[in-house]
Length: 212
Length: 99
Image (tube, rainbow over all chains, first blue to last red):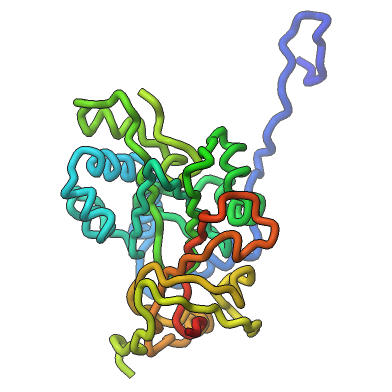
């Protein structure tokens, strides 16, 4: 069959094929491979350790953060611990402490928090996994810092005029978790049910927790 | 110099501080937009090796006290379009802060 379009003959046309060679060996990728192979050759690490670290990295998802938030919504003592010492709170629910100090910031009726790293892409990876592409974009980084209300509106998030917006620029050794407001109508919900309402974007602060 | 040695913290939560207005070359983690601006210490975050040294494979010791400093957005951006009370919190190392 020809790859050209033949709409008139009723033959479904094929979309353009992705090239088989879809990998580009950039300078930094070559550097990464060279360093990794050297570390393995010198027996500082081994291929299986590298592979399992990548696997662990891919296993970290916003579900970890959701678990922490849902616990904070249901357990006042835990909420206090989370706001005082985020790393200890993670450990208390069986998650990894994380390599960086975790600062949890809580949304209330009076304040809405949103996180950015204007310098690069610092992100609470131990709780949320890898950051979304938009979080790393120059557009988000340069605009949410000086016009947060408009950027939030673009995410569909309208902040009332009587609510203060607090932007947190993650410039150094802290990582930030936004604790969204618990949605109304969730009285008596279990932690597991509540965790289902806590999205990645709500924990970055660009939106609210899902409504039940 | 030991791994645990730190510069003594000079500021406490609530203190008013001004960010140095300096433009050294190198790996600096104090954003341009905040240099020369005044804010209030939100909290002391502990002491960490100086990233300006770490970036060049030096130990970055003694550790530098790190603070979260809260600024009014209206003090940071001339044309800020939001509430007067809106804020931005930034982590800044002590050697970038003056009383």
